[in-house]
Amino acid sequence: MRILLVAMSNSVHVARWISQISDQGWEVFLFPSIDNGRVHPDIKNVSVYHSLYSKRGNLSRSVKISGIPVGDKDLAFFLRMSIDRFFSNYRVLHLKHIIKRIKPDIIHTLEFQHAGYLALSVKKIIKRGFPPWIATNWGSDIYLFGRLADHEPKIRNILSECSYYSCECERDVCLAMTFGFKGKVLPVFPNAGGYHLDDVFCLRKPGTASNRKIIMLKGYQNWHGRGMVGLRALERCADILQGYEVIMYSVSDDVRFAAELFQDSTKIKTTIIPNGTPHKEIMKLHGHARISIGLSISDGISTSLLESIVMGSFPIQSWTSCADEWIDDGKTGILVPPNDSDEIAKAIRRALADDDLVDEASIKNYKLAEEKLDSKIIKQKAIDIYNRVYKENYRE
Image (cartoon, rainbow, N blue to C red; front, side):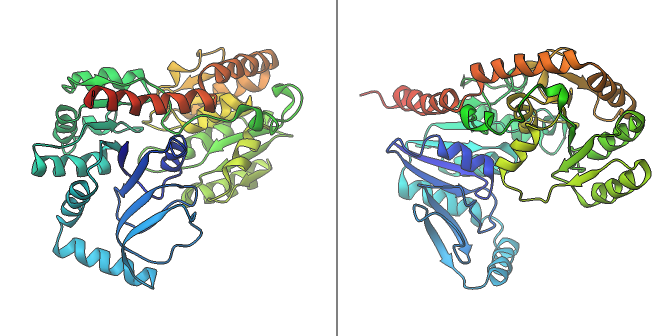
Protein backbone atom coordinates (compact mmCIF):
# COMPACT_ATOMS: atom_id res chain seq x y z
CA MET A 1 0.00 0.00 0.00
CA ARG A 2 1.23 3.49 -0.85
CA ILE A 3 -0.03 6.26 1.40
CA LEU A 4 0.57 9.96 0.79
CA LEU A 5 0.09 12.07 3.88
CA VAL A 6 -0.37 15.82 3.45
CA ALA A 7 0.38 17.23 6.88
CA MET A 8 2.53 19.54 9.00
CA SER A 9 5.93 17.88 8.81
CA ASN A 10 7.22 19.58 11.97
CA SER A 11 4.25 18.50 14.13
CA VAL A 12 4.63 16.03 16.98
CA HIS A 13 1.02 14.97 16.38
CA VAL A 14 1.93 13.98 12.83
CA ALA A 15 4.97 12.12 14.14
CA ARG A 16 2.80 10.17 16.58
CA TRP A 17 0.29 9.33 13.88
CA ILE A 18 3.00 8.06 11.52
CA SER A 19 4.56 5.95 14.30
CA GLN A 20 1.38 3.90 14.42
CA ILE A 21 1.66 2.73 10.81
CA SER A 22 5.40 2.85 10.09
CA ASP A 23 5.95 -0.84 10.88
CA GLN A 24 3.33 -2.21 8.47
CA GLY A 25 5.56 -2.55 5.44
CA TRP A 26 3.62 0.16 3.63
CA GLU A 27 5.23 2.94 1.62
CA VAL A 28 4.48 6.16 3.48
CA PHE A 29 5.12 9.53 1.86
CA LEU A 30 4.78 12.95 3.49
CA PHE A 31 4.10 16.20 1.65
CA PRO A 32 4.44 19.13 4.10
CA SER A 33 1.24 21.16 4.21
CA ILE A 34 3.28 24.15 5.40
CA ASP A 35 6.44 24.75 3.40
CA ASN A 36 8.98 25.39 6.16
CA GLY A 37 11.68 22.86 5.27
CA ARG A 38 11.45 21.17 8.69
CA VAL A 39 10.72 17.63 9.83
CA HIS A 40 9.95 16.67 13.42
CA PRO A 41 12.79 14.56 14.87
CA ASP A 42 10.35 11.83 15.97
CA ILE A 43 9.22 11.15 12.40
CA LYS A 44 10.62 7.89 11.02
CA ASN A 45 10.29 5.61 7.98
CA VAL A 46 8.86 8.13 5.51
CA SER A 47 9.84 9.94 2.35
CA VAL A 48 9.40 13.71 2.69
CA TYR A 49 8.92 16.05 -0.27
CA HIS A 50 10.21 19.55 0.48
CA SER A 51 10.63 22.39 -1.99
CA LEU A 52 13.85 23.85 -0.59
CA TYR A 53 15.40 22.73 2.69
CA SER A 54 18.58 23.19 4.70
CA LYS A 55 20.59 20.65 6.73
CA ARG A 56 18.97 17.48 8.09
CA GLY A 57 19.63 18.20 11.77
CA ASN A 58 18.87 15.27 14.06
CA LEU A 59 16.53 13.41 11.72
CA SER A 60 16.27 9.64 11.70
CA ARG A 61 18.30 7.91 8.99
CA SER A 62 15.04 6.23 7.94
CA VAL A 63 13.70 9.57 6.67
CA LYS A 64 14.35 10.20 2.98
CA ILE A 65 14.32 13.86 1.94
CA SER A 66 13.51 15.05 -1.57
CA GLY A 67 13.78 18.66 -2.70
CA ILE A 68 16.45 21.24 -3.38
CA PRO A 69 19.08 21.37 -0.61
CA VAL A 70 20.29 24.82 0.48
CA GLY A 71 23.26 25.11 2.81
CA ASP A 72 21.95 27.99 4.93
CA LYS A 73 18.50 27.83 6.57
CA ASP A 74 18.01 31.61 6.34
CA LEU A 75 18.75 31.51 2.63
CA ALA A 76 16.34 28.59 2.23
CA PHE A 77 13.66 30.59 4.04
CA PHE A 78 14.26 33.65 1.82
CA LEU A 79 14.07 31.55 -1.35
CA ARG A 80 10.83 29.87 -0.24
CA MET A 81 9.26 33.24 0.51
CA SER A 82 10.41 34.59 -2.85
CA ILE A 83 8.95 31.64 -4.73
CA ASP A 84 5.67 31.98 -2.86
CA ARG A 85 5.53 35.69 -3.66
CA PHE A 86 6.05 35.34 -7.41
CA PHE A 87 4.60 31.85 -7.96
CA SER A 88 1.84 31.53 -5.38
CA ASN A 89 0.50 28.36 -7.01
CA TYR A 90 3.77 26.46 -6.85
CA ARG A 91 2.75 24.32 -3.84
CA VAL A 92 -0.36 23.13 -5.65
CA LEU A 93 1.66 22.25 -8.74
CA HIS A 94 4.33 20.54 -6.65
CA LEU A 95 1.77 18.34 -4.89
CA LYS A 96 0.12 17.54 -8.24
CA HIS A 97 3.51 16.45 -9.57
CA ILE A 98 4.16 14.22 -6.55
CA ILE A 99 0.75 12.55 -6.85
CA LYS A 100 1.35 11.86 -10.54
CA ARG A 101 4.83 10.56 -9.79
CA ILE A 102 4.29 8.20 -6.84
CA LYS A 103 0.67 7.21 -7.66
CA PRO A 104 -0.49 6.73 -4.06
CA ASP A 105 -3.30 4.31 -3.27
CA ILE A 106 -4.62 6.68 -0.60
CA ILE A 107 -4.24 10.40 0.09
CA HIS A 108 -4.72 11.39 3.71
CA THR A 109 -4.83 15.04 4.76
CA LEU A 110 -4.23 15.67 8.46
CA GLU A 111 -5.94 19.01 9.24
CA PHE A 112 -8.18 21.18 7.06
CA GLN A 113 -6.91 24.77 6.88
CA HIS A 114 -3.57 23.91 5.28
CA ALA A 115 -3.49 20.26 4.22
CA GLY A 116 -7.15 20.03 3.27
CA TYR A 117 -7.23 23.26 1.28
CA LEU A 118 -4.04 22.27 -0.54
CA ALA A 119 -5.37 18.84 -1.55
CA LEU A 120 -8.67 20.40 -2.58
CA SER A 121 -6.88 22.73 -5.01
CA VAL A 122 -4.97 19.83 -6.51
CA LYS A 123 -8.08 17.68 -6.92
CA LYS A 124 -9.77 20.46 -8.87
CA ILE A 125 -6.84 20.32 -11.33
CA ILE A 126 -6.49 16.55 -11.58
CA LYS A 127 -10.25 15.92 -11.52
CA ARG A 128 -10.39 12.33 -12.76
CA GLY A 129 -8.15 9.66 -11.24
CA PHE A 130 -7.63 11.38 -7.89
CA PRO A 131 -6.94 8.66 -5.28
CA PRO A 132 -9.37 7.92 -2.43
CA TRP A 133 -9.08 10.88 -0.06
CA ILE A 134 -9.30 10.70 3.73
CA ALA A 135 -9.83 14.17 5.23
CA THR A 136 -9.04 14.29 8.95
CA ASN A 137 -10.42 17.11 11.07
CA TRP A 138 -8.06 18.53 13.70
CA GLY A 139 -9.12 20.61 16.68
CA SER A 140 -11.07 23.67 15.55
CA ASP A 141 -11.08 22.94 11.80
CA ILE A 142 -14.87 22.82 11.57
CA TYR A 143 -16.12 23.79 15.02
CA LEU A 144 -14.56 27.27 14.87
CA PHE A 145 -13.45 27.90 11.28
CA GLY A 146 -16.76 26.65 9.94
CA ARG A 147 -18.35 29.77 11.40
CA LEU A 148 -15.98 32.14 9.57
CA ALA A 149 -17.02 33.53 6.19
CA ASP A 150 -13.62 33.04 4.53
CA HIS A 151 -13.42 29.38 5.51
CA GLU A 152 -16.97 28.06 5.43
CA PRO A 153 -17.20 27.52 1.63
CA LYS A 154 -13.76 25.87 1.52
CA ILE A 155 -14.75 23.48 4.30
CA ARG A 156 -17.93 22.60 2.42
CA ASN A 157 -15.84 21.95 -0.70
CA ILE A 158 -13.49 19.61 1.15
CA LEU A 159 -16.40 17.67 2.59
CA SER A 160 -18.04 17.38 -0.83
CA GLU A 161 -14.83 16.16 -2.51
CA CYS A 162 -13.26 13.79 0.04
CA SER A 163 -14.23 10.12 0.11
CA TYR A 164 -13.77 9.56 3.85
CA TYR A 165 -13.92 11.79 6.92
CA SER A 166 -12.21 11.20 10.23
CA CYS A 167 -12.16 13.20 13.44
CA GLU A 168 -11.77 12.77 17.21
CA CYS A 169 -15.15 14.19 18.34
CA GLU A 170 -18.66 12.89 17.76
CA ARG A 171 -19.56 16.58 17.80
CA ASP A 172 -17.59 17.07 14.58
CA VAL A 173 -19.27 14.13 12.85
CA CYS A 174 -22.58 15.95 13.27
CA LEU A 175 -21.05 19.20 12.07
CA ALA A 176 -19.60 17.52 8.97
CA MET A 177 -23.06 16.25 8.07
CA THR A 178 -24.53 19.75 8.41
CA PHE A 179 -21.78 20.96 6.05
CA GLY A 180 -22.95 18.51 3.42
CA PHE A 181 -20.65 15.51 3.84
CA LYS A 182 -22.08 12.48 2.02
CA GLY A 183 -19.14 10.10 2.17
CA LYS A 184 -18.10 7.51 4.74
CA VAL A 185 -17.32 8.42 8.34
CA LEU A 186 -14.37 6.58 9.85
CA PRO A 187 -14.17 5.58 13.55
CA VAL A 188 -13.80 8.44 16.03
CA PHE A 189 -10.65 8.36 18.18
CA PRO A 190 -7.81 10.74 19.21
CA ASN A 191 -5.68 12.09 16.36
CA ALA A 192 -2.50 12.15 18.43
CA GLY A 193 -2.44 8.40 19.10
CA GLY A 194 -2.61 6.52 22.37
CA TYR A 195 -0.38 6.07 25.41
CA HIS A 196 1.90 3.27 26.53
CA LEU A 197 0.05 2.97 29.82
CA ASP A 198 2.52 0.73 31.64
CA ASP A 199 5.34 3.16 30.90
CA VAL A 200 3.50 6.37 31.81
CA PHE A 201 1.89 4.85 34.92
CA CYS A 202 5.38 4.54 36.38
CA LEU A 203 5.70 8.33 36.09
CA ARG A 204 2.76 8.95 38.40
CA LYS A 205 3.43 9.99 41.98
CA PRO A 206 2.68 7.08 44.34
CA GLY A 207 -0.38 7.44 46.55
CA THR A 208 -3.67 9.23 46.06
CA ALA A 209 -4.18 12.20 43.77
CA SER A 210 -5.48 14.29 46.66
CA ASN A 211 -2.03 14.24 48.29
CA ARG A 212 -0.43 15.96 45.34
CA LYS A 213 0.63 19.60 45.68
CA ILE A 214 0.95 20.74 42.07
CA ILE A 215 -1.54 22.53 39.82
CA MET A 216 -0.85 22.33 36.09
CA LEU A 217 -2.01 25.15 33.80
CA LYS A 218 -1.69 25.21 30.03
CA GLY A 219 -0.38 28.72 29.48
CA TYR A 220 -1.02 29.55 25.85
CA GLN A 221 -2.86 32.82 25.18
CA ASN A 222 -3.68 33.33 21.51
CA TRP A 223 -6.63 33.24 19.13
CA HIS A 224 -8.07 30.26 20.97
CA GLY A 225 -5.98 29.65 24.12
CA ARG A 226 -7.03 31.27 27.40
CA GLY A 227 -4.10 30.74 29.77
CA MET A 228 -4.47 34.26 31.15
CA VAL A 229 -8.03 33.52 32.25
CA GLY A 230 -6.81 30.45 34.11
CA LEU A 231 -4.14 32.51 35.85
CA ARG A 232 -6.73 35.06 36.96
CA ALA A 233 -8.87 32.23 38.35
CA LEU A 234 -5.93 30.92 40.34
CA GLU A 235 -5.30 34.41 41.70
CA ARG A 236 -8.87 34.42 43.02
CA CYS A 237 -8.05 31.21 44.89
CA ALA A 238 -4.79 32.44 46.39
CA ASP A 239 -6.11 32.14 49.95
CA ILE A 240 -6.26 28.33 49.68
CA LEU A 241 -3.23 27.76 47.45
CA GLN A 242 -0.53 28.12 50.07
CA GLY A 243 1.66 25.04 49.98
CA TYR A 244 0.83 24.37 46.32
CA GLU A 245 3.03 24.98 43.28
CA VAL A 246 1.56 26.22 40.02
CA ILE A 247 3.36 24.77 37.00
CA MET A 248 2.70 26.27 33.58
CA TYR A 249 3.63 24.90 30.16
CA SER A 250 3.14 26.02 26.53
CA VAL A 251 3.43 29.55 27.89
CA SER A 252 3.21 32.59 25.61
CA ASP A 253 5.17 35.75 26.42
CA ASP A 254 2.32 37.82 27.84
CA VAL A 255 1.30 34.98 30.14
CA ARG A 256 4.91 34.58 31.20
CA PHE A 257 4.97 38.20 32.43
CA ALA A 258 1.61 37.74 34.16
CA ALA A 259 2.89 34.59 35.88
CA GLU A 260 5.81 36.52 37.38
CA LEU A 261 3.41 39.15 38.70
CA PHE A 262 1.12 36.40 40.02
CA GLN A 263 3.96 34.86 42.00
CA ASP A 264 5.07 38.23 43.29
CA SER A 265 1.61 39.25 44.51
CA THR A 266 0.42 35.89 45.88
CA LYS A 267 3.77 34.42 47.04
CA ILE A 268 2.68 31.11 45.49
CA LYS A 269 5.54 29.28 43.85
CA THR A 270 5.05 29.43 40.08
CA THR A 271 7.22 27.49 37.66
CA ILE A 272 7.25 27.93 33.89
CA ILE A 273 8.29 24.87 31.92
CA PRO A 274 10.37 25.82 28.86
CA ASN A 275 8.82 25.29 25.46
CA GLY A 276 10.32 22.19 23.90
CA THR A 277 10.41 20.27 27.17
CA PRO A 278 10.23 16.51 26.39
CA HIS A 279 6.72 15.07 26.39
CA LYS A 280 7.73 12.50 29.02
CA GLU A 281 8.51 15.32 31.46
CA ILE A 282 5.14 16.98 30.85
CA MET A 283 3.41 13.65 31.47
CA LYS A 284 5.35 13.20 34.69
CA LEU A 285 4.24 16.62 35.92
CA HIS A 286 0.59 15.77 35.20
CA GLY A 287 1.26 12.61 37.20
CA HIS A 288 2.34 14.72 40.18
CA ALA A 289 -0.50 17.24 39.88
CA ARG A 290 -3.77 17.34 41.79
CA ILE A 291 -5.45 19.50 39.12
CA SER A 292 -4.76 20.11 35.42
CA ILE A 293 -6.40 23.15 33.82
CA GLY A 294 -6.83 23.64 30.07
CA LEU A 295 -8.83 26.52 28.58
CA SER A 296 -9.60 27.52 25.00
CA ILE A 297 -12.50 28.98 23.05
CA SER A 298 -12.36 26.06 20.62
CA ASP A 299 -10.68 22.66 20.38
CA GLY A 300 -11.11 19.04 19.46
CA ILE A 301 -10.25 16.65 22.23
CA SER A 302 -7.50 18.51 24.02
CA THR A 303 -4.29 16.48 24.30
CA SER A 304 -3.65 17.99 27.73
CA LEU A 305 -7.06 16.71 28.88
CA LEU A 306 -6.17 13.18 27.77
CA GLU A 307 -2.83 13.49 29.55
CA SER A 308 -4.54 14.45 32.80
CA ILE A 309 -6.97 11.52 32.43
CA VAL A 310 -4.09 9.09 31.97
CA MET A 311 -1.93 10.56 34.73
CA GLY A 312 -4.60 10.85 37.42
CA SER A 313 -4.77 14.63 37.66
CA PHE A 314 -8.27 16.09 38.09
CA PRO A 315 -9.17 17.87 34.82
CA ILE A 316 -10.75 21.30 34.70
CA GLN A 317 -11.41 21.86 31.03
CA SER A 318 -13.25 24.44 28.93
CA TRP A 319 -16.54 23.13 27.60
CA THR A 320 -15.74 24.39 24.10
CA SER A 321 -13.70 21.25 23.45
CA CYS A 322 -15.50 17.91 23.22
CA ALA A 323 -14.40 17.08 26.75
CA ASP A 324 -17.99 16.12 27.57
CA GLU A 325 -17.41 12.99 25.46
CA TRP A 326 -14.65 11.93 27.87
CA ILE A 327 -15.47 13.17 31.35
CA ASP A 328 -18.60 13.13 33.51
CA ASP A 329 -19.00 16.78 34.46
CA GLY A 330 -18.76 17.26 38.21
CA LYS A 331 -17.59 13.69 38.81
CA THR A 332 -14.52 12.83 36.74
CA GLY A 333 -13.69 16.43 35.87
CA ILE A 334 -15.32 19.84 35.68
CA LEU A 335 -16.30 21.67 32.49
CA VAL A 336 -16.05 25.45 32.59
CA PRO A 337 -16.64 28.45 30.29
CA PRO A 338 -13.27 29.49 28.82
CA ASN A 339 -13.59 33.22 29.51
CA ASP A 340 -15.20 33.21 32.98
CA SER A 341 -12.48 33.31 35.63
CA ASP A 342 -15.06 33.35 38.44
CA GLU A 343 -16.60 30.04 37.35
CA ILE A 344 -13.15 28.55 36.84
CA ALA A 345 -12.17 29.69 40.33
CA LYS A 346 -15.23 27.92 41.75
CA ALA A 347 -14.16 24.72 40.01
CA ILE A 348 -10.63 25.06 41.39
CA ARG A 349 -11.93 25.61 44.92
CA ARG A 350 -14.13 22.54 44.68
CA ALA A 351 -11.30 20.37 43.39
CA LEU A 352 -9.01 21.58 46.18
CA ALA A 353 -11.59 21.07 48.93
CA ASP A 354 -12.99 17.66 47.99
CA ASP A 355 -10.40 14.89 48.36
CA ASP A 356 -12.91 12.14 47.61
CA LEU A 357 -13.92 13.80 44.33
CA VAL A 358 -10.33 13.99 43.15
CA ASP A 359 -9.39 10.46 44.24
CA GLU A 360 -12.46 8.80 42.76
CA ALA A 361 -12.03 10.70 39.50
CA SER A 362 -8.42 9.50 39.27
CA ILE A 363 -9.52 5.86 39.55
CA LYS A 364 -12.41 6.19 37.08
CA ASN A 365 -10.34 8.11 34.55
CA TYR A 366 -7.58 5.52 34.52
CA LYS A 367 -10.13 2.79 33.80
CA LEU A 368 -11.33 4.95 30.91
CA ALA A 369 -7.73 5.26 29.68
CA GLU A 370 -7.35 1.47 29.72
CA GLU A 371 -10.50 1.12 27.62
CA LYS A 372 -9.96 3.93 25.10
CA LEU A 373 -6.44 5.36 25.23
CA ASP A 374 -4.08 2.40 25.30
CA SER A 375 -1.58 2.76 22.44
CA LYS A 376 -2.21 -0.80 21.24
CA ILE A 377 -5.93 -0.05 20.84
CA ILE A 378 -5.42 3.27 19.03
CA LYS A 379 -2.65 1.86 16.81
CA GLN A 380 -4.89 -0.95 15.60
CA LYS A 381 -7.68 1.50 14.83
CA ALA A 382 -5.29 3.58 12.72
CA ILE A 383 -4.13 0.51 10.81
CA ASP A 384 -7.71 -0.64 10.30
CA ILE A 385 -8.62 2.69 8.68
CA TYR A 386 -6.13 2.23 5.86
CA ASN A 387 -6.90 -1.45 5.37
CA ARG A 388 -10.60 -0.62 5.13
CA VAL A 389 -10.13 2.20 2.63
CA TYR A 390 -7.80 0.09 0.50
CA LYS A 391 -10.15 -2.90 0.43
CA GLU A 392 -13.16 -0.76 -0.40
CA ASN A 393 -11.42 0.84 -3.35
CA TYR A 394 -9.13 -1.89 -4.70
CA ARG A 395 -11.06 -5.12 -4.49
CA GLU A 396 -9.36 -7.87 -6.43
